[in-house]
Image (cartoon, rainbow, N blue to C red):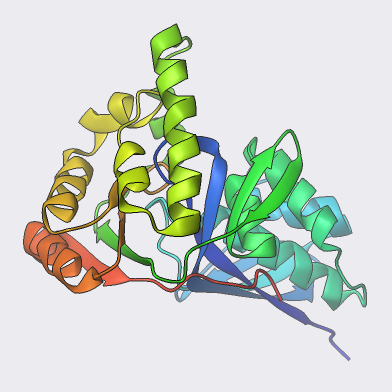
Length: 280
């Protein structure tokens, strides 16, 4: 009898502005993977069947935990290459599903360490595994408090932006002033997300570590952030490596409308609920 295992993990928005490679927010877009032991590697996704390369993140994750070929059936709500944590979601779900297919129950700690190790940073990985708003530092993660009065609006362009390309745009060095400004913004961001304090969130805007240097890669991201603030959002930022923009609001409807008008037929704008739980 053929055995199979399934698992689900949420998408996520990383950075949230100044929290580069440190902050992640899990959102209710889910990736489901079913794994079946096989003689050869096969991935089925969106009606396409293919053999993943040895360098493919999902194959690396599964191979690391089970050390054998699998047939992976992927049903992913998280848009690819949009800054919504699709890679982390699919790796967490695939690694967990593969272990279940062999009769083993995965460890959350091991899944987090695996995916963070492959990606080189743990913000999306922690959000996908544990859910909610998380902070990570040198392999350690913590769940952060989040005000229930806040809503999160996402402007998601149709065009994609590969994370690798977005990372290549970053400088090797930063000025002392940029570093100091970033630290201050992160402090205000965490406090603003915890309390919903509009002034704290307003002070968290702007970023010289990644957003400034990526601006030419996706001009529409900055446009979405600008119209979101003009429509009443308390904070706006790149979602991960973009091109999606995330806005924090108490009254999300005007922000959604402004983002929709800016995008036109080039994408969608929507409120995404926070995924309070991670993988399952």
